[in-house]
Structures are given as structure tokens and as C-alpha cells.
Amino acid sequence: MENILDFYKGKRVFLTGHTGFKGSWLCKILVNSGAKVTGYSLEPPTEPSLFKIANIEEKIHSVIGDIRNYATLKKAFDEAQPEIVLHLAAQPIVRDSYKDPAYTYETNVMGTVNILECVRNSHSVKSFLNVTTDKVYLNKEWAWGYRENEELDGYEPYSNSKSCSELVTHSYNRSFFTDKDGKCIIPISTARAGNVIGGGDFANDRIIPDCIRSVAKHEDIIVRNPYSTRPYQHVLEPLYAYLLIAMKQFENARYAGYYNVGPDDTDCFQTGALVDLFVSKWGEGMKWINKYDGGPHEANFLKLDCSKLKSTFGWSPRWNLEEAMEKIVEWSKLWMSGDDVCACMDRQIKEFLNK
Figure 1 (spheres, rainbow, N blue to C red):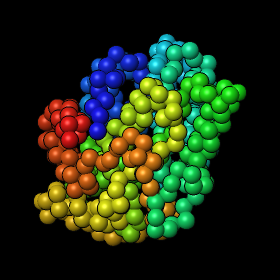
Figure 2 (tube, helix red, strand yellow):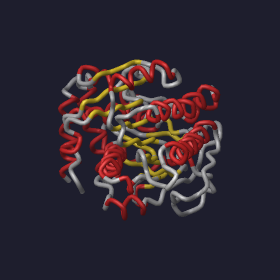
Figure 3 (tube, rainbow, N blue to C red):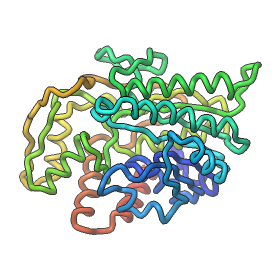
Figure 4 (cartoon, rainbow, N blue to C red):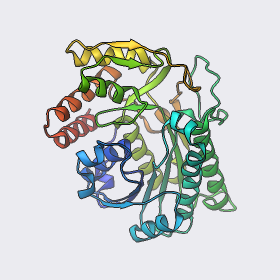
């Protein structure tokens, strides 16, 4: 696969959601490539946060603002004059979407409208990517992976708001970014990624952060839904794919489209099996307890068919789940011992890109 760093050197990139887990890793890759990055997001959503631990703010132009506020977003956007726009800002937690569905829809739907309005009124943008989720599909819990042409109709407010975000993107693409002859004006894509894991995720209601918190407290790991099957992948896998799609459509608009980004079938694990893998890699006598809590509806079985991404770009996952877990344990143990996690991130990025 291609080393994308050379392409991004000197490029003006506008990244929403830069203070989050994925956003912080993405900033690190872009900074390492020599890109000129402007980030727009709320304050980091967790404490601690990878954004602060890795000193991301010192390496980019960071603007703290709400994606729902079009005026402040447009001001930051216009000042940046971006060539490439990567939209990651979201309310990303399924359970939180049950607690505050209105906020979830405002952020995930109107936030998408606002960033697309910025793109529509810009003369600098040459590539736009909206990052959604594997949960955008009407999930029938069947045994095969969803393809990009399947029906979009997520179940609960988070998933459904991301389905809506996809539809907003499709409408803007047809209405404003394609001329009357069907020729692309600005290439627009969406990327639908599965569950990402990696060092530096401190979110609530995510299994690996729950594991790390339990380790730090020397407590058994509580698993609330051990039999749900998810497509787990290291965070660098989708981030590489996002950058690849944005680069390719920048160079040739025919690559614009809708892409699933997920692991191979062998890395679609039940949550309990994932925790078994974590425990085996961490050591120190850790164990987990099944405490199904009967919480609100979440998908039990979901995986993606990534044939389109593979056939279009020659893409394939680089790290299997066992390798990904080794990287998580490496990062987490360094962080807990107060060592240099930035150097660890640089090393892992380099190793990933060179594989």
C-alpha cells in the first residue's frame, strides 16, 4: 500500500473533531506528514484525553468551537482556506444518544449540514470526507457483511443520526457538488468504519477503555454485553483509509463515493473474546466478569463487506486484532508508567505505514 505522507506535506487540512480519540491520532499522522492542520472541535470529551497527553494543541492550529454553531465554524473554516476537509466531529456514544437524542441529532446531522455549507461556499476545497459509522445500515443481524448499497436506517439515535448524516451528504453531493451534466465539482465521499481500538481511548461505555480503567484500579473487568459481535480494528486502520480516500479523490474525482472500512472477518470478535485477548496480552492475573446489564438496544451482530475499498484502492488491513492489542497494551503501559507516549505513537505510525 501507498505511503501517503508525501502527498499531505504542505496541504491545508481542516479537521473537525480533532480533540477526540480518532481525531488526535489523525492529527499526529498529519503533523508527521508536514500538513498544515486546522482543527475545530469542542474541548476534549474525556479526562484524561489523548489530545492533551500527546500535546496535539501545540502542533496544529486548534480552534475550540461547537460544530452546531455555523458562524464560528465558518469563521475558522474561511481563515484556514482548506484544500482537504475531514469531518469527524460527532456525538459518538450509543448509550449517550438515548440520554440526549436531541443533542445527538443536532451534532451529527446539523453539524454535517454546517460543514457542508462551509464547503459549498468555499473556493479552496478540493476533497471532502464525511466519517460516519458501520451502524448506518438497517441491521438485520444476518451472517454476512453489509455492502455500500444496502439500506441506511440505524436503529437508535446515534446510529440513525449517522444514517441521516449520510443522506445529507448524498443530497449535497447531488445538489451542489455535481453539475447538470453529472460532472463532479468537488469530490465528496463518506467512510463507514467499524469499532476502533487503540492506545489513548478514554471514552465511557467502550470496552477497551473499560479494561484500562479496571487495570488502573486493580479490579476485575466488567463486561456488560460479552456476546455482541463487532468488527474491531486498530485506530490507524480507518485513519489510513480516510487519508487514502481523501488523497485519491483529490487527485481524481472518479474515486469519490461511499466506502466501508473494516477488518477482515477473522477480526469480527465477540466482546468477551476481545477481552480474553486483552487479558492474555496484559498479563498480571487480570480477569473479567460477565455482568449483562439489560441496557438499551444495541446491535448484537454487525460486520462490513469492504470489497469496494479493497478493489478500488488495493487496500487491506495491516494489523490483525492480536497485533492491534499488543499496540494498545504497549501504549497503555507506557502511559501508566509516565513514559513518552508521543514517541510511542510516532513509532507505531511509522511501523504501520511501513508494513
